[in-house]
Image (cartoon, rainbow, N blue to C red):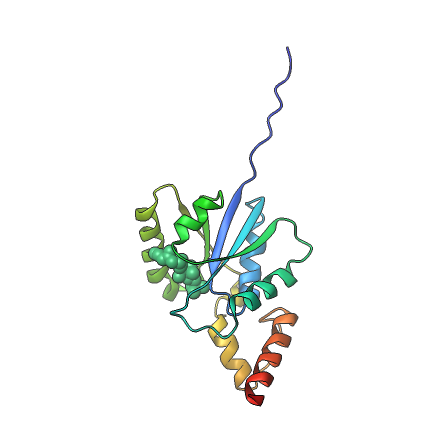
Length: 172
Ligand code: PNS
């Protein structure tokens, strides 16, 4: 009897966000996600309503630069509905990081709305390392602008990009 060779399909998840810019907390979630999934598609939202410091391309480049050796990480921009993007990219799991209770209400609302929009899409919440549970892109930008150090809070390349960005904007 011939043995049937079973090649399981790759488990793929979408990790969406603004990533303005990517922080060590985001990196931590991606690395944890890779323990569960074969591939993670990092989806950078293009939201003209939400003013971002970095352009979509810059936000994507910072993520790509950090994960340059990872064949299992893909970075794409998206606009429109997340559930549509996930479906069009063969993923039915959305990963979101949950830092504190304060995140819960917004995340709960979004997960259930996404489920209402497409019942095939599941949201998986992951807790970052405790040392990142207070960390956000918004605070990173504020600390940087006020002259504070970002050691351990963002990848080194991101700190460099922040420096370049603010040098440019003060020269303009
Ligand atoms: O990093 P953020 O800003 O918390 O990410 C929010 C994001 C991008 C996940 C969310 O705004 C989103 O999914 N936007 C896409 C539009 C959409 O699908 N809206 C309906 C969600 S209920």
